[in-house]
Length: 271
Image (cartoon, rainbow, N blue to C red; front, side, top):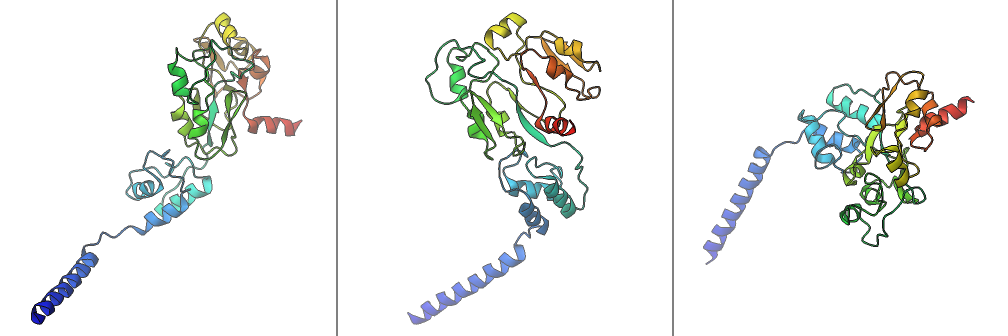
């Protein structure tokens, strides 16, 4: 009995040593740059880069399967560090992307067809007879975008979401969450922004929301740079011509146009 036990113990030790040796020899060595990049990335694992998380993006960057600026959440310092680790250069001159809500259909401005008392979800609200708002294009006001924001930089006010642009990372989760596609990513310093997506004519738009773009074209006629063209009852901007003068914003009779905070603050400081 004892010899058998000793034999089994010996075999166990032999197999254990063999496995330990094999694990060292056959182990796949992880590129040290992967861990270094992962430490630099924000660690939000929001998926905005198109990968499963920061770890997956780190591996993709090292393997050359992702652009050095693939992470929209990281700041310029983080992108520069990632580029340095990879021995590449990052274009840090590009404007920061932030979420913009293309609707100002507040509770006071937007008309409703009926009272909605269902669950607080925009997809569900829109499924009931096309939504309780008269405007078929505007915000449904249930806050699905706010719930989808992993960085707590959105909140509801007067029935529409508000983006805290200085905190927005441009991850795009709110864009994906909106069933009416009224949220988009745009340059933080875009000189003017249209806060409406309704292509309805002047009469229909005005009946649906007092803040809607009516397609009146006053902004286009006011622009001295000829940077605005009306298409489908909405202004389209040529930002190569636009000089951010704000004349179109001042001319808009329904508050459908606006300028980003960074430009408003700059204009205020120069006065």
